[in-house]
Length: 71
Image 1 (tube, one colour):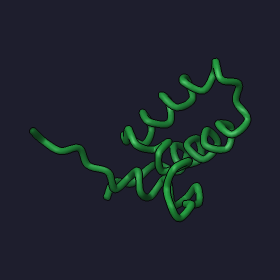
Image 2 (image 1 turned 180 degrees about the horizontal axis):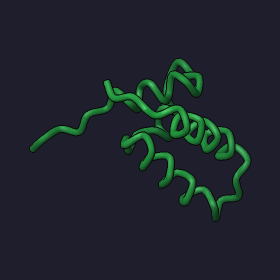
Image 3 (image 1 turned 60 degrees about the vertical axis):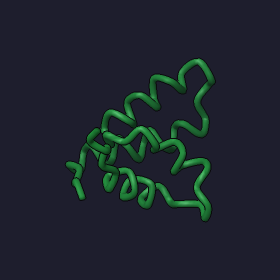
Image 4 (image 1 turned 45 degrees about the horizontal axis):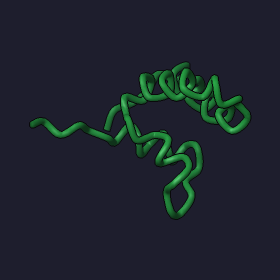
């Protein structure tokens, strides 16, 4: 599993909190930055569509565990 620098983890947590109150036209920019920090294209799925619901820290840990499949 990858790790994040404390500043990157804090920025990811901040972005996740901001996404809940972001106007639609700004969501894409924040999601792009979050995916870039966590290097996981599924982070919004983990945030909004995972059952059971994950905490922000659990979302980060799950995203850090993501490894792309080599074709």
